[in-house]
Length: 200
Image: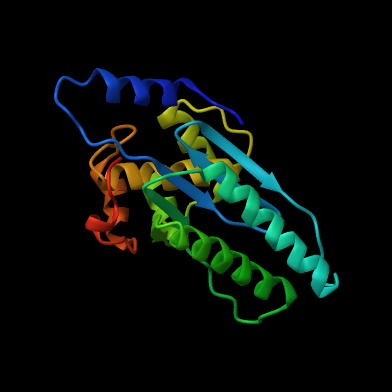
């Protein structure tokens, strides 16, 4: 797992704050069949897998189970998980169903652990990072590295970091100062009830 000074600074600010502040653990998840990005207080990581829509059902199920297990291991115990929402597909295929199945498998597992889940549209994630909802992943990666000083090897990790940053901002504990035009993206997120996000 790669880490950066961002996370150390965040932890110190929580410990050294003069006024007591709620402590929240937030995870960002960019769910993908080929490389799921995960961001937590400890840093970012990517969970890569390989497969094909032509694979037998048993192999496809094993792949989804593996990704889900690894994601839950990385997330651990958090108060809020910000998950990128699924995109629309006009022509469903084998991998389309697998992507949807993986998304629900992970979200269901989080909810069953009593972890509050926020669903972030891809356009909201891009807008929060760059100010434009149509920005490409490379632009989001560059923005994440620049704003948070994080060393990120892939755009999957950058997306996950942005998702986590959005959750922290929504909770009133932003990881960095973000322009108002970027923060407007928070309004497009399907947030859980705040009462469901309990500080530990």
